[in-house]
Image (cartoon, rainbow, N blue to C red; front, top):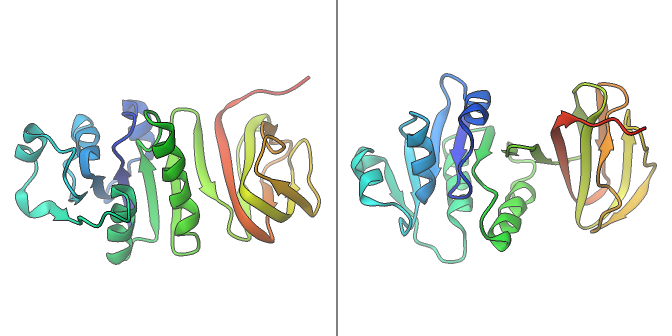
Length: 210
């Protein structure tokens, strides 16, 4: 089962939502993210959170039995929503609206990709990137010149790439700018990691370096 999950961050564009949405998706909203779903003509199958960000107009547009309160203070609404989707058997979760606004929220939202790594294929989408966590080895398909960035949350060891313009071989990648702005040289490319939390940013544009 595949879920399309709307977080309560910066509103995704109509074109981004259309590109991510598939017929039959379970539509899940993290609290106020329900507004983003409704703005794109999608009535959530479930709204999950403590409901401190859901306004009355949003409540009125969604059947009451689709609201699932989860008031735990030690998890974010996005975490609660991902957990809900997993509990229903979703093995693919596409997240929209998780960026923008407060930088602490945006960074915390990225950590969800590593927290649930191996339990489902979870990806975040914004206007520039599709972001995922590398679990073992990840294949990267796209046109030559597609921008690729690798960001270690902490330290990653054994980072190896194939098919990228600037290769890494059994490299120890710290949290920092070293993996920023590579590009696909041949497709499919690949990246693998032995230990650590490694995020893969695949750009939506081509920018070949001279």
